[in-house]
Image (cartoon, rainbow, N blue to C red):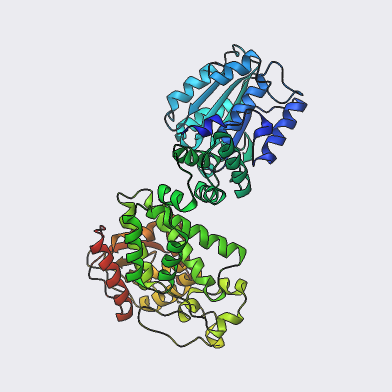
Amino acid sequence: MSSLYRKYRPANFTEVIGQDHISENIKNSLKKGTVGHAYLFSGPRGTGKTTLARLFAKAVNCQSPIDGIEPCGKCEICLEMANGSLVDIIEIDAASNRGIDEIRELRERVAYAPSRGKYKVYIIDEVHMLTKEAFNALLKTLEEPPAHVIFILATTELHKVPDTIISRCQRYQFHRAGDESLRELLKKVVKQEKIGLDDEAIEVVVARAEGSFRDALTLLGNVASQDKKLDAAMLRELLGMPETATIEIVRASLTGKDSDKLMATLREFINGGGDIIVLVKTLTDLLKKEILDGSSKQPYVIYDVWLLEQLLVVLARVRGSADPTALLLAKLYELASIGQTPQPTEVFKTIPVVEQAKLSAQEVVRAVPVVEQVPEPPTVSDIQKPAEIKIEEAPVAVDAVSHPVKSEGSDEFWNSFLVEIKEVNHAIYAVLRSAELESLLEDKMITAVKFRFYSERLYEPKNRKQIETAASKVAGRAISLECHVRTDVKLSPEVKAEEDLVGAVVDVFEIEG
């Protein structure tokens, strides 16, 4: 049962679901005889890239294609393709064959004519994993391929494929599977395999599959061996998914800054076999859906956007973490303790959602409480863009040997810089407001933060670029970032209260500072 996705893999173009914009285009090229020499299939995992590549390879070599398009499934070529013995279809996993030697060997083999079919088809999966040298070697072959060779490159990370490769291929972007397409497929398989799942349980699998046909069928295969009929609650428990009520409690705890209730809920969820990564992903999906369809509560739209960004950033960090659970617990505890919660003031009620999204972080902070302080509702005059403070350039003298000393005008620069970075990135501002400016040099600003993971956040390429752009704008010259980690960073009382909470999280969950 665990190989349902193999059993129900489409055998012809008609059976392909959710990628009509691609299958129709390919069928037209087959009908007109205008087959290209190189194709690039990109898109999320489990959406049919390899499946469609194999169908295409079978169709161009089929001895008796139906209507000149669909593979017949009965000729020698189709039968050999089905059992994996057709030597003219070569599948290469670039993740394990990513070096220049493998590509050089491929270049030598493409010169030989196909043994059985009309074309030799090379399907290179996860092509983005090739090394720079391997891409350069492949490029020459793509530029001048033999007439009997077709390349089909597949990738889940198109941005990692060089432009020189992309420009030489016919590119097709695969879409995530829609809920309706997944639902239709699962109901068909459940009926044919006689699996005990009701409609509500199928909806759980649809939600967990995250737009992947393969993941949906794999999940279905995992539960298909159950003798009893499974309802939605039983399936959630089996897959480690959170109940709707659990998600609601977690979200309410984050919004209401109730860290005790949050941690109690998470402890119960984890002890019950729940997966906290799945929980956070479910929460991000909910936030994204509500923001996109406009169902997010009016006063909390800005907070939901900010919270979604925070959760997506920590999910990205989880991939390389030695202890993902501890990292996510620490972040959720931090968000519940120092998270900025909007208040339903009259000002927010009268500002359209589109205009709310344009407000700077400074205006958002004015409308939300920090820790124990509850601010007065903002007035209309408060919702104004802070005037940019111009800094006159002045030579900066710094003793490179001694400990950095703040130069004249550095405090004014720092305050103006914080205002500027608020306009660009709310999350980075939250980190920088607890940083200290050690020194402002002619071409560099040297900062200090209390925790190492703060420094790592600032040095992330996208964040660093935004920081340096904002600093250069304020200073009127090119400024680069240098960040140190110091435990004795001087903080304002307000910020210190928040940082003490972060420090407590570091200690509790044993995260390396």
